[in-house]
Image 1 (cartoon, chains in turn brown, cyan):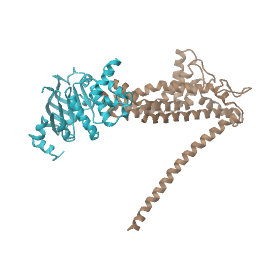
Image 2: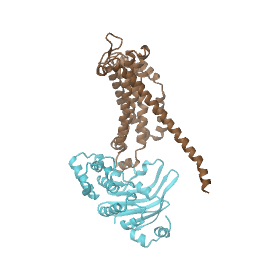
Image 3: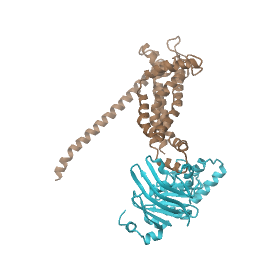
Image 4: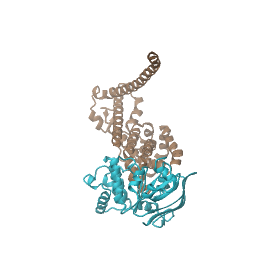
Length: 299
Length: 251
């Protein structure tokens, strides 16, 4: 009897072992990939400082970028400024829209919202960035050129294009947060004689603010890393602009525009890797902020 | 005792399902009325018609009338917000807002436009006193309401409901999620509150109805089987089904 039991349980043990090994291999693959990417970008990006003797402070705070000049100048501040200003401005435009869209989909018209609005917003996430860039270039830029002084290109155009691109990210997270709100909270508010709008801005908004912030930071991270669409509408002049409608550049567009024209191993090429390192580090910072916000919102 | 709430031939449908059938009932002023009956008998549904919380469920349809102080609460002249201000509600699960204790109690008055800090302070104190919570929390008013125990949270929800000065307090199985000691505290509290408020409570616990209420209404399958003073209903029920239920033969 005992023997037959042991015999029966063997296939289970094999299955258990296969499952463990398989999942462990998957995780190992992911971890190795991430670490090798970080190592590769870091080793390349740090070469600028160790081998080519470019000062870190000069790179981060210098405002002149001319790697081919004599002497070559590696001031990346215009790119850093461009990346931050476009993505934060994009989030400022997108966050209120995303919150209102989420409220409409969950609170005001759940049937219509889930059936039509959610798929439409998810569709926005699937549109290729070159299409966004093209639309930005042929619609937004001419419009800004007519209304505001300047060429129409610049931070404003970039931020507007990016805000549409990150709208699905923030909306999806806000919608999930809203749907998971305990219904007792809303009932409690209604039972005290609150109107729907009072409940939304006095109870719903404050309660879901941490989740909304998570969405905003993820949106900023996505905007920060977006290259093509921004590059098409921002002008790509490597200097800090005096207005929102003046040509400037971002980290991503600086990399994509010059990477093909430089020789691997040259100082210019290494400097681009340093920009990539800054990009990657900032993305990590954004991820940590998200984790921190999520931990806080659980309390 | 004078009747405050008069329910006349009330039928309520959730889509095709009829949840309340021809319910006629009067609820006396400044007394405790308990609704008892097995799950799904319509007692909570009826409670929720009294402050029109059922309005929010799509497909709900109502026939008949409910009058509070002589006014039909389903007439188009009645604003649902002012009705709910007059008819407070405490739910099954304590549902304090994720705000401070003070802000929870001040929430209702602020909704209805009160901004005077001194008056708000007074309302918060008197409401917490009425809910027998003041002495426990008076030094921690700025603390999050979520840091309180379940029983304290439920008394906070009572204080929150009292803060808008209602005439009626509805309690929807408000002790069923609490431990026996917290339950006892709430029962004592309700006894004190009945001198000022008309209280209607739904309870799963027949002993609680017998201990606390003045009038008891027994529901079965959406109908009122028997409605009389609590002592009579439990000692000498006139309907066979009531007797079966209170003696534990079903439900």
